[in-house]
Length: 207
Image 1 (cartoon, rainbow, N blue to C red):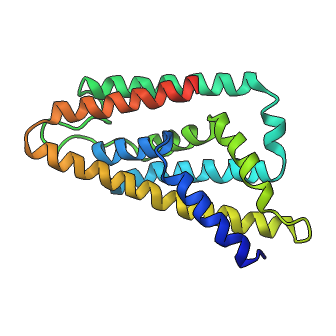
Image 2: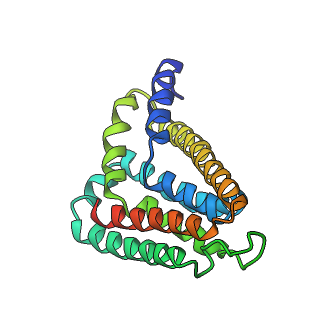
């Protein structure tokens, strides 16, 4: 296991990083705005699986190997970024299942798998995430203790904090939807959400 001293440093460090606005947090806010917090949980599941995979690979040294294959990341980034930008354009035009319908309580929601895949792709296709975990995790690993147990504890902490942070952002998005929805500004809300989604797509592709 890990020492409490190590965890007392790691937890606030990653909490600060996780709460900082980024691709996954922006996506959580957008989906909280357009899909509600409950359905956004499906995106969070996909994102947490992706983050756990990246963190485990970084801790095991696989990330260094993956970062030596830029072609793989570039292709994955552009496909994922283009998909998110397409969804953003549809939302901006108030079309598609991701957009908020003119009547807030009607309209088919986005599919569970669609949301989960969005979260997974956003987490895994970001090379900065791989590089970040390569830098963050090694200083907190003790060579005198079992590596597997330490990684399990750190990844558990990472996923817990990441989930809590996404809940905060998704709840904020839902609150924004409620405020603007009362004023009948559904189209404006779709355009805000669509613009943010397009921004996440561009960020993923070019970041």
